[in-house]
Amino acid sequence: MFSFFKKKSKVDPTALPELQHETPPAVPEASNTECAPPLPESTQNADTPKRSWLDRLTNKEAEASTPPVSEQAIPEVIAPPQPIAPLPVEKPTPAVVPLPTPPIVASPAPAAILEAEEYEEEIVIPAAVAAEQKRSWLTRLKTGLSKTSSNLTTLFIGAKIDDALYEELESALLVSDAGVEATQYLLNALKKKVKDERLTEAPQVKTALRSLLIALLTPLQKPMAIGKHQPLVMMIAGVNGAGKTTTIGKLAKHLQAHKQSVLLAAGDTFRAAAREQLTIWGERNNVSVIAQESGDPAAVAFDAVHSAQARGTNVVMVDTAGRLPTQLHLMDELKKVKRVIAKGMASAPHEILLVIDGNTGQNALTQVKAFDDALGLTGLVITKLDGTAKGGILAAIAITRAIPVYFIGVGEQIEDLQPFDATDFVDALLR
Image 1 (cartoon, rainbow, N blue to C red):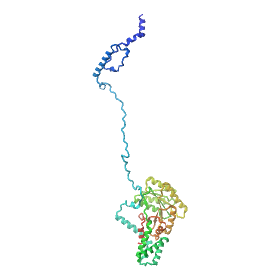
Image 2 (image 1 turned 90 degrees about the vertical axis):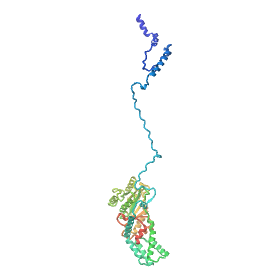
Image 3 (image 1 turned 60 degrees about the vertical axis):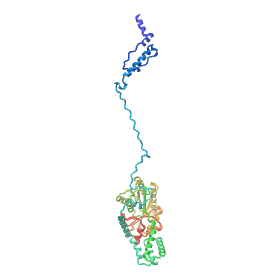
């Protein structure tokens, strides 16, 4: 009997409410009673309000006596480090912070056309030194043109103003290779001037001839414009033996004196040692030379233009092989070089110079016509005027093809190549 009731007590549901009404174990004071879950309403009895009031009262006293949680002796918990937000970086605004001014590079390309005489103002030369250089140049020029001037100046020594004087003057002008057209122009203008001004003395006629020659040659006096293009591409042409390679070396020195950086292109791939000769001039002037062994002259010129653009060089001078105007296939090759240069730089070549030997006389006029028709010359360089009796060729060029004469040469030295000045030239002829 006893065992039966014991077994039944384990499964009798009526016994469960009694277990639920048992008083729960006392909660230690240190524990937070607010964390205990509330009892179900079905389990609350009549004294629940009183116990609840006492519990709240006890909790308030415990809260008053218990220090804040932050001051309790609890294990310190180290929070993981929080990522530090990057500081805001203020980006400079171009309108507020101006960009630094780039350094000034030597010989920058000006925006406007600057002529050689304007660069001369930047080169400070003492007045005494400049005057000495001028006198030295005039002396060399007079010495070089002495054979030409001797035929002209002796005419006016004790001469009378008559037809005999005009005939002698005509012969002297023709001998100096002034040409028929220029000689006839000067004689007619001189006769008219003598008549209008009533000149009676030979020195007066000589002075009148001087003014007429200066007026005739002044249109040829034009300084070479530098700085308009970057780089300035110059193509040098001429017949065999005119002195193209030597002239290029002297021109490089002249341009460097005007603060221009220079690059040379050895386009003469036919003449033996032409490339080596140009290289020697480059070493003298500390100038780079673009060359190819047995290469196409047009390809050499093309490479030189691109190299100058990459380096920021101011001037490129392209040397070409000497050729006669009658060699049509070689003249066509010269046209090809010009076309290829234009492919490398649309506006190039900017200067096409013809180098003329001053001793060739009237043959020089034929060269000017042929090369001008083929290439469109922009300037001339007259070399080897020292010791020549044919200095009157400039008058023939002025009458037939008034192409500017940039430089004239009266010797082998670098300083013997100088810009053409009409007054100085005529004074050297009629000294």
